[in-house]
Length: 47
Image 1: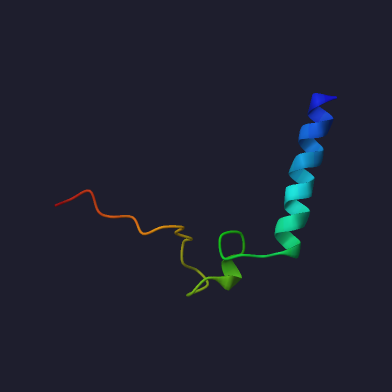
Image 2: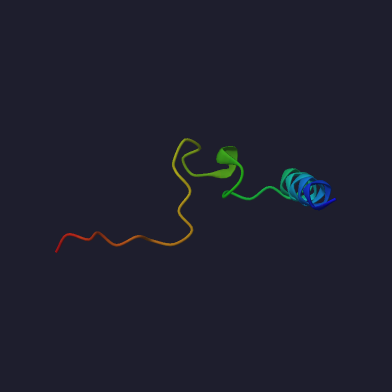
């Protein structure tokens, strides 16, 4: 049963993400479209 619940939750998330696309989940919404998604700016470790 736990596996079925996990599968259901994963499918629910997939359906939600396809119904409500964001740049995080949809490369076509990124600027430019082929760029990697960055939720927050990452500072370089080099100083």
